[in-house]
Length: 391
Ligand SMILES: C[S@@+](CC[C@H](N)C(=O)[O-])C[C@H]1O[C@@H](n2cnc3c(N)ncnc32)[C@H](O)[C@@H]1O
Figure 1 (cartoon, helix red, strand yellow):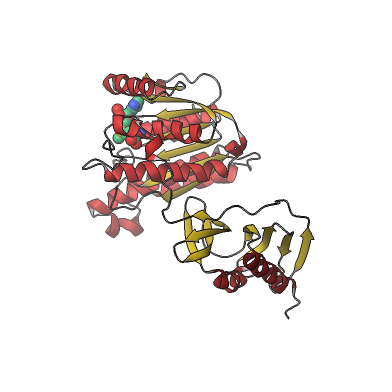
Figure 2: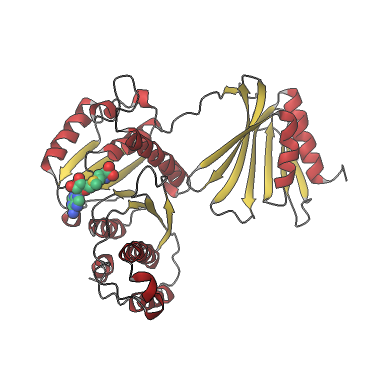
């Protein structure tokens, strides 16, 4: 039993931890049931009570970190190998090992020469790093989010949390997309408002060394003037704001990433339409109010007792609207997902639609049929994005 490939892999891990030779560890090919879980990554960190193995569970839009003493890392990972992850890769300074598990959790172990000659200095992991380093983001102060000390100003803690969470999600989605390796790209932020997330996006790419042109589109001239001034004063040469209506904005040239966060009612549809039409690789939208469908909803007989309550009809209209939007994105060649991006106690408008353009989209005919059925079920005659996409 101790000679099994999995046991030998765990023994190599244990030996590398004892010798201070572990560079990093990756578990992949997730085969469990947890939605959005992709990988587990391991590295050594220096904590106050000695070195620990920091294990990061990487989900589609978040990370969950657990630091365990070196003696506990092997038993914990042993439970995951085979049962939840079919592949594992161990990088050490003395050799690299790749484990491929079979259905019984054993499998094959392949050794190769070490890619890394030296182990990294264990990082001090006392404090979790924020996705956006506030000390390098003076625009947060200029826009009134933080005080001079870097703390959130009174009443702005939720906004700062939302900005940080957005940057975290953006990082995951970009890393999961073909934009990951781009050194230059173009971003449109529709309904930019005071520009909190437009600036955060520009800072995110700047901090990664990506030359990103970022354009915020906003209807209110006072906000456009303010944000352009702050962009200039904060040294963002390729960030600018333009006054205009989302639907009328003349998109020139390629768009790689389109974001629309809390654009009112059907302005979200205008933004999604612009993104689809421009063939953006990634589209991120956090819808705001949903008035269009609420007014049309005819409760199907089976839901009559549920939807006679105003608040439930309102929630149903929101869910159906965003479901239709995601379905339309799928019909138009995107892989779309809907998730909660911030806890409801921090913001009621906490849903995000994230869509990545597929390299080879499937035949949309069956999806079109499902859309027709859905609209008929709720008696919906018109939906703004559906109307725009059929023109
Ligand atoms: C609730 S704010 C959100 C601002 C920003 N995206 C954020 O999440 O912090 C919505 C902004 O979108 C702008 N807006 C709404 N509809 C628009 C449209 N059709 N064209 C341009 N701007 C629009 C509003 O003026 C407002 O500033």
